[in-house]
Amino acid sequence: MALLIIGSDRADDFAKHARTEAPDRDVRLWPNIGDAQDITAALSWGPKPGELAKLPNLALIVSVGAGVDHLFRDPQLPDAPTIVRYVDPDLTGRMTEYVVLHTLMHSRRMLEFRDLQAARIWRYLAEPAADDVRVGIMGLGVLGVAAANALRALGFQVSGWSRSQKMVNGITCFAGPDSLDAFLEQTDILVVLLPLTPDTHGIVNGSLLSKLSRRDRHPRVPGPSLINAGRGQLQVETDILDALADRTLHSASLDVFETEPLPKTSALWEHPRVCVTPHNAAESTTESIVSYFLSTVGDLEAGRPLSNIVDRSRQY
Image 1 (cartoon, rainbow, N blue to C red):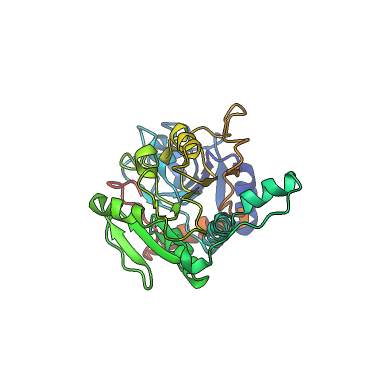
Image 2 (cartoon, one colour; image 1 turned 90 degrees about the vertical axis):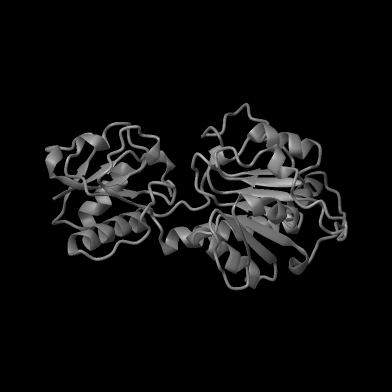
């Protein structure tokens, strides 16, 4: 039984660490795969289309990240292997930190204070208390629930929306397309942690943003904000810029983009009410990813139940 590291720009580091952590394992690094029939498990991110289909005995594919859309872009993705998402305390903790950080940044109006500092202007801006701010999280998987619980602990009003009904203690849960408008209209800060599927492609568009809270009851909430740390293809960036221009949207934090790296010509780089980060919201360590991979392989070989199995019909 051989293990293959394939597709990631961190593949060399993954292979090196896997060989150190499991010296008795036959760890191979694509494209030097040796006899393809030996390979039973692969740690993969964005592999070249058709390469996984060349492995006749492949039983397991572990995604380097929580998202698996990069695998389903391969029209020759083999049907037989079980696909497992990377879900680990390291990734979950980092994503939670990112969501909390940027929720506080928008609720405490830090982008505006940054501009005042640059202009050397000493000015008070009214800021809402956490319990005056309604945060809505699209996507109530492991990452969404962890972020929701952390925000709730800080006093924010938190709700969540997902494709299927979820029950999370202390969180108002909405489910399905029929409840999306009701979820959006009571959301001041929208956090997007959805998986990318055919159904969610381009979901963060002008129509959706126009349905966010327009409330006037609290003067300290300057307008709705967006945080997208899911996938870049979930958003339509021209619509986000238009929404910022006409104040449909007050501010945004974007960690993912339609094209990555974000082109230097993008207007998002210099927009005063946008925070751009380089897809680093939950950049897990090499050690934690490789340990997760080896542990999952061990579970498979021992016949133990696997966690975080991908539903191919839903693509997450």
